[in-house]
Each structure stands twice: as C-alpha cells, then as structure tokens.
Image (cartoon, rainbow, N blue to C red):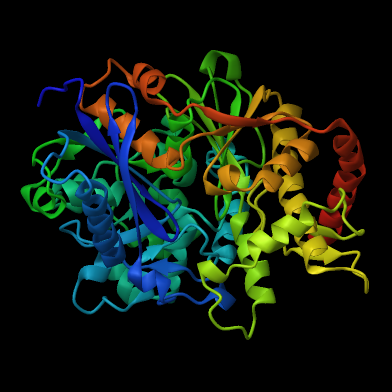
Length: 540
C-alpha cells in the first residue's frame, strides 16, 4: 500500500484502565481524531485483590475496548474516512499473560475464563515478591552469568520471570496449560495479525531486554540450567521461550480481514512490533539523547537514551534496565520510574471519600484539594510524606517497602497533606535523576508527558522546584499513542527511518515550568527530610 501525503496511521495505547486510539497523519503528525474506551471487567474490579496486591486483566477487555476505541476514533469522519496505512501498539509492562499452543490467550479457553492466573498479570501486580527475591539471590550466587547486570542489578516482582514462577507454584493447572508466555505488547500485534502458533509470536526487543533478561551477551534469554536452578518446575517451559527479538520500527505482521472488519479499515496493512507505553511515549515527545522523559500517569516511567559509544561500559544500578534499541534503533534506552504517582493521589481521594456516594469523576475532590494546596508554601504545615504506596521501583526496586506520612498535628489539613504527597512524588523523581547523574549518565533536559503533566500546573511546578530544573510539558494528550503511530508510520514505509518519522511527527512543547529560586532553596531541606524518611522506612 502506497503512503500518500494524506495517509494516516493508528496508534493504540493500552493503559492501566483503558485503551486509547489516535488517528495520526503520517506526513506531519497531526492528530486528527482520538477516542478512549475503558476495560469493562477491570472497571468492576473483577479478578483483582488490592489487599494482596493482585491486579489481573482479562484479555477480552483488551479486545472489546480496542474495538470500541478504534471505531470511536473513526466515527467522526463519517464516510470520508482517511486511508489507514499502518497500526502501532504500546502497552503497560511488564504485563505478561499465558497463551495456548495456537497463540490464543489462555483466559479465552474453556476452563480458564474466570481464572486470574490465566489472565494478564498487570505491571503493578506484586504477588511475586518472594520469587523476585529468589531471582536476586540466585544471580548473586556467582553460579551463573550476571543476568541482572543490565536491569539495574535488582530484579523486580513487577517483571516477567517472577510472575511466571509465582503462577507455576500457585496454580500448576494454569501453568501446565500454557504453551508459552508473552508480554501484552507482543500479544496485541499477534492477535491483530492472526498468529496461530505461540512459538511464532514476534517478541519486542524493548520488553525482552528490560523485563525478561534478554541480552546478546549470553545469546538471548537465560538458559535452562538457570531456570531449573531457580525452580525445577520451570523446566517444564518450552526452551527457549523465544530466540529472536525485533525493534518496533519493524513489521510484526499484517492486519487480518477479521480485525479489519471489526475496525472498519483495510486488511493487509502493517502492524508494527509492539513496545512498552513509556518507551513509545518518549518517541512521541521527540526524545533526544540525554533527555529525561517522564510519563506521568498512575505510575511514572522515566525514559532516557544515549549513544552506545558514549555509554560504553557504564551500568546504572537500581534502575529498570538499559537495553539497545528499546527506545530507538541506534541508541541504548534506559528505563526508571515510580511504582505509584497518580495512584498516590487517587488513593488519597478514595481515603477522604470513604462513605460518600456519587464520588465518581464528576464529584472528584482533587480539583478543590489542588486549589487549596496551591496556596500553601513549600512544606505546607510541616507534613512530610514518602511516595511508596505501591512499593519502590527506582532507585533500587523493593516492593516490600511502604509509604509514610509524618509530621501530622492537629493543624494539619486535607490540602496540606495533599501537598505533602505531591512533594513526595516530586522528591521520588529527583532521587531517580540523581541516581543517573551519580553513576555517569547526565540528564540534560526534563520532559513531562501525560494527563497529569498537562492538567496539573501545581504538580509540574512542584516537580520543577524540587528538582531545580526546567520541565518542558508536551502538548499532546496522547503521546504514547502518538509514539505508537510514529512506529507504525516507519513500519509502513512512510518515513525513511524512525529518526525521520520522529522528527516529522513529534508533538511540540506546550509550556515550560521553571524552578522558583526561593522555593527550590526551601526544597533542599524538604528533600533531605524525604531521604531520612526513606531510610527509616527501609528499616521499618
């Protein structure tokens, strides 16, 4: 299919609560339409147990919401629909799910439709903390290659192998029924392109390197000997689970007639190799070498990339990995982040709203809290907080640690505590930047993307003040979906390579927040308090 000046691509962004579809013009990145559809079962809280930190999503949610979002995005064009020449996909991660031999998600098979262990294990599921600890202990034993050297030296319970091992131990029936395990970002392209063999699903270099310990240094995934040393039950997995990965500027396959019919577009168009939302979002924001792009959503994911010849042998400890090609071909991609960001504020609102009815989005307390908190000085009324409500992702992953609020007194108010929580999330971001800089990777620019970055001036300004750095906020509300669209355009041949596609289709900067010198000076002491509180929490 030829790519013309008016040709468009679809970017699909599978977030924690919903899927977003955006129609983007290949020539210049103009966003012509977008729609969002929530996951229906997830919205009802099904298959989840927050007290156990179990968060599972049914693959039928993805299929239904994706169809609704694409149709919604295209509906406004009427009969005059643009020519769609490619599809790109990004998802949360690590969010693995088991598949049957024919590539079908196990939860879509008879006998497993209500089994949470047959579903997608969402990134923020922390039921495998013990398994992650065992992986770290085995890697520290010196018996095997240092498989965790490129993922910050610490394996997380949020990631692929820990989750597979947890299911193997807790639910042998589901584990034995799985022919393979795939990341959500690999499953969606396989679904759209009609892959009918689990062993032929195209694997993302991004997901494999950051979460599954893939590296060319040891010829791919960790070997059978390491897996069986971890637990003999893993010897029942097909070995290797896969032996090839691809960057997302390549084609995973072609859209099937079935899915073309569901969407109302042409069959046979390229579907690009998937990747994680934050990595594609960074491309949608026009990432440059040593830019620190913060995807500010339910959690944060922070992305930086650098030329391999400048990275050399540098290894940044305690981050979520450094992987060639995970962001863009030709660069080493670095990932870090916070396990909760928007979730911190959502939790606080839910806490304050206990017992109230009709507290949906229209009745949100957050706008009023933000307005009042904006009137308070740095440090508010002396309250201090730690942002680890969902554990700590970076620096130094540890899902066993917990958040804290200190300095409370009878004069503390809901807005003052809310401000302390904002300041805590900003301090968490500063700690990540400091880790990069301390270990030899400079941060030359900070970029914010996502709904929180665009909609909350208070949060963005406090981040700028705490970090004492300018923060550029990107205009697009759909930067991750836009990034997926940029990869789709490259895979479809609309641009010469991913660099050219990014430069043509990136979203511009909407506004810049500059640090207030007086506030930045005050936050030095508050940041010191944050670090002391964190040290206490580590030993609590």
